[in-house]
Amino acid sequence: MIEELHQIGDIVRDRYSIIAVLGQGGMATTYAAIDQLSNQSVAMKVLSLHQASQWKVIELFEREAKVLASLDHPQIPKYLDYFHIDLDSDRRFYLVQELIEGESLAAIAQQGERMTEAEVKEIATQILTVLCYLHELSPPVVHRDIKPQNLIRRPNGTIALVDFGAVQDAYRHTISGGSTFVGTYGYMAPEQFRGQATCASDLYGLGATLLFLLTQRLPSELPQNRMKIDVRACTNVSSAFADWLANMVEPATEDRFNSARIALEALEGRGTNYQLVNNYIASLKASGEVEKAQKLKPLDTRIHYERTSDRLTFKIPSLGFRPLTLFFGGLAILIYWGLDKFILPYLNTLGLISQIPLGFAAFVVGMMFLMCALLFGYALIGNILIEVNRQTFEIAWYLWGIRVGRERGYNSEITRIGIVDTVSKNGQKSTHYSIWRGEKQHSFDSILMEKEEMDWILGEILSFLSQ
Image 1: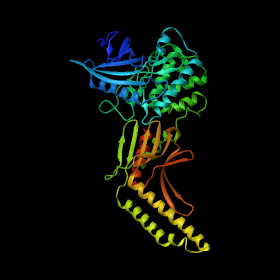
Image 2: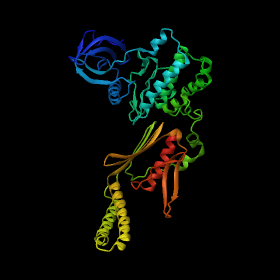
Image 3: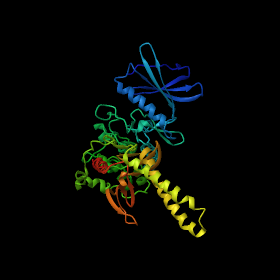
Image 4: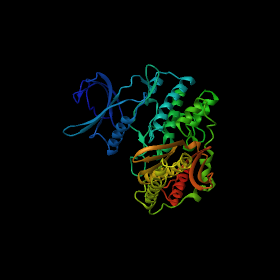
């Protein structure tokens, strides 16, 4: 039992007046308070360093504050303040956020209210909208603890997602060698027991929550068939909704919906055949294509590479003052010198008949100069970011740290990854390393990389997606 850190009526930091205890968890106590400066009702979460079982608890608490501060969605509590207070024998950490008025879905279920299919679908739609927002951030934010207790129904009927104490941003891991084992038994996806939470893990938690609302039974108590919850045996819903729920609680991540967006579209009847796993990605391992494409990391590469269980990142830096950069810069100067020396001085001195071809020549040479100048600038100050997670991929281009272009897509839409040789109208051949979504081609080849580096990146992307 956690020791009471504050009493009703306590005033914290000469500002927050405590009026009630909202709840106690394994690592913190949450109070309802009044902000005396704004007269606003707030929720104040308090963690004692003295009572914390390990430093990881502090790290999770600080991460919750950091992530909440970066979020802006009407169905997520607004971050208001974060601070700590030092006492003689303790340090206490405080996270102040918007107080969500209403009842948790767990409390509503305890009152004996069994929800209809239509009501459960409405809840699913609302939470999937929130998950689309979280999962489509860069990097994605994984809640990791979706359950009835963390879904609050406001008086106006909207559902809020609370308690980001288990949150994981995709760049961080909190125990040696992997992710923290965080979640609630019954609502946790199987991969969370291995410390490998992904965006699909949140879909499992939502699916298990919806089954609880329909049956008023804990997910762990529901009948199973071959290690999978038997949705039809425990619910009385339409066939289409039963299929949808069964997909949400698939034990294997690759059999679940590829993203919250696809799950939402399927629920609303706007998706394609969501029961089929992406054929291309599903067939990668069996095809032998991965083994053929995999290459060793080039020894002298300048590319920053990071790979975890749920994210693959390549940061390709600029060339700097290397021979190729100097070549483009020198060529641009030479072209401009020729333009200035042999074409521009004669444009106004020759007759009208001579000005037409000379003007055309000036335009062509000027475009050549512009192209070389742009290539020089790109080689000198440009860089590329390639990111792939379990739901999406992204290719972004930067100049001096400013993003000048970005292409993104869902992994479920990928139809091919590989190399293609093209021939332009003037007969010039070129090779592109690309990701295809149907007819849409996303190329990641660049003058900033050597061929062996692009071969290596291609192999790593195929290997990551095949896992």
